[in-house]
Image 1: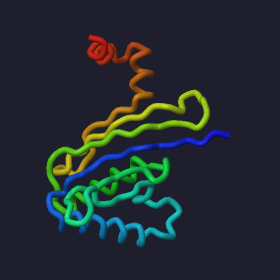
Image 2 (image 1 turned 90 degrees about the vertical axis):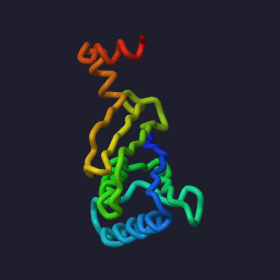
Image 3 (image 1 turned 135 degrees about the vertical axis):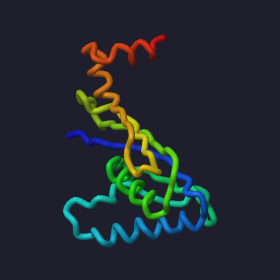
Image 4 (image 1 turned 180 degrees about the horizontal axis):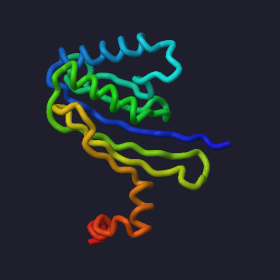
Length: 146
C-alpha cells in the first residue's frame, strides 16, 4: 500500500504583528466553527508566526504531509478580505508518494491577487508535462530549454 503526500512551506507577511495575531485567531475560530464538518474548508495546513511573538510574518506548512492546497487558498482569500491585504502572493507545493507509482509525483504553484481576492494563476507540473508532450504547449517547452 502506498501513502500519498502533499508538502508546502511558505510565508505571508500581513504587515503588522496585530494583523498576524488576528490571522491566528481567525484560523482557530474558523476551525472551531467547522469542527464537526465532514469536509472542513480550512484544514490541511499548520499556521504559526514565522519569527515568534511580535512578527508580522505567517508561516504556512503542510500538516505532516497531508497538505491541502485548496484549504490554504481559501484561508488566504478569507484573510485578505478580513485584513484588507493587497498585492500578489503565491506558493508552490509538491506531491509525492511512499512507493513508485505512476502519476504520483509532481507539484505546482498558485498565484493569488490579494487585492482582488482571487486566484489569478496556477500551474500543475503533471498537466504541463502532459500538454508539452502532446505538443499543446510548445512555446513553454522552448522557453525552458532555451
